[in-house]
Image 1: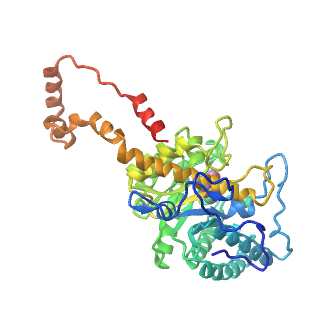
Image 2: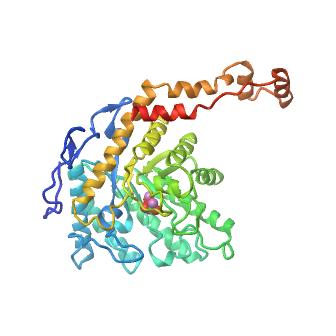
Image 3: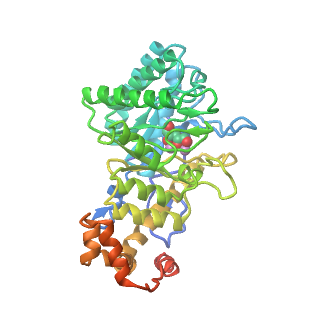
Length: 441
Ligand code: XLS
Ligand code: NI
Ligand code: NI
């Protein structure tokens, strides 16, 4: 069901539906068939696709060299509440035309921040009740909410990790409001992305204090939300840098270590973003695998970087090989723990037609769908898994098993090696594995 406000913003575009790969209609899905079953679940259930409010409805394409190139028709009124409602109308039109079930937002994406916290809170209440109505009418849900504790200049030295207590308190107030907002909109999860939680210079930074403070805020937020009845999962979104030179949630492994150190691992999982993985010099697949191995693969921010650029370009995903490898990890992990696929991606600055946001999402959705179908085939009809299992089969035998179970001393291990004498080499067969992926794409 398409939900428009008083005015239709994306004129001439109807509901996007599955037409199959033979279709030449650019406004159709070629691979994403929401009801198609893959590994026992519909694609719709696997993915839980979400639009990112900030990129799709707010970001007008500004960069360090010039202002935005978009002039959104919902961004015209001089009254902030009117503007926020118009934007919500556009958001729900976009979401329902795409056939998505979810969106993700920062507090200040929904309505502009006011001069005081009190005034901002009033504005948030107003827009939340408007959005609630639209949610009820359309059935669209909130995948996660979050607080933008990085844009306001007051956070230039950090939010939860600011050296100044009054700024930490302000961040706490903002996070509390964003939690209230997320809960009132029945958000399924809540995200922490620590854009300013890190440092520009170690010379003026006390890392120990800052990490303790960050953990303190996360624990307080968890306790508060749970008390309000929030049942969802909290996600940490790792990113190594940008805007800070170094961010504390550097990558999945670092964030997992941090959560365990501070006893937060029961309530928190990870939201893995493709371009953040590549900025950390990892592959997307690697970050997913590390999170999955810890039982913490919560959600995905879908986008891609650019091989020639070293920053977070947040392009829409198109790399079928990269996403196929990712879907292999996802399927083997048994899916995401509570989250979904949020398109934390933006169209290019020179993509200035309103319809471009549709092309972008259709491309991203189809890339994931095609990759999921391919991954299912690889898992169910190729030798990939059995070949990999075979590489480790020596641990299924008596001594190998004993070693794995911790029933062997170093002395005994050494005796086995002496007895074995000269060993034969065993190929890792990487090229064979790689060819299997190509065969099924
Ligand atoms: C920025 C992050 C941000 C988070 C939400 O790089 O991806 O958009 O997803 O604050
Ligand atoms: Ni993100
Ligand atoms: Ni990002």
